[in-house]
Image (cartoon, rainbow, N blue to C red):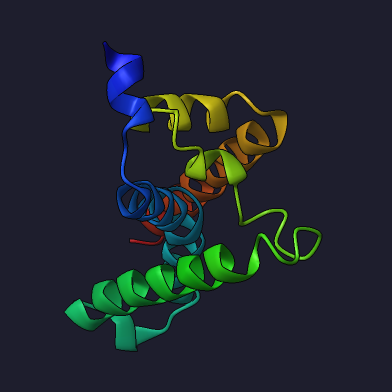
Length: 128
């Protein structure tokens, strides 16, 4: 029954799922880490400013839209940002995430992000 429901997924719904997954799982961590690094090196303009969160969200969405638009046409250029599995209509949302997570490249990206954010959190906490 779930396979039938997944097969009937509308094209727009599938495209929005793929865009959301690209923005959340690939673009957002990059720009969140960049904002954290700016804060870490002493940029006091970021202290308590809600505009930083809005900027990270908007830039992540724009980055994901660019990757989704140009990724299929230029796979060599966008190989680390565009994930074709996010746009497979026969997969459910959780199956798309699972298929992406089990790839060695995605696993390496996740480990790198976790380690980077962990190191930055320790440094930030130790600075006072």
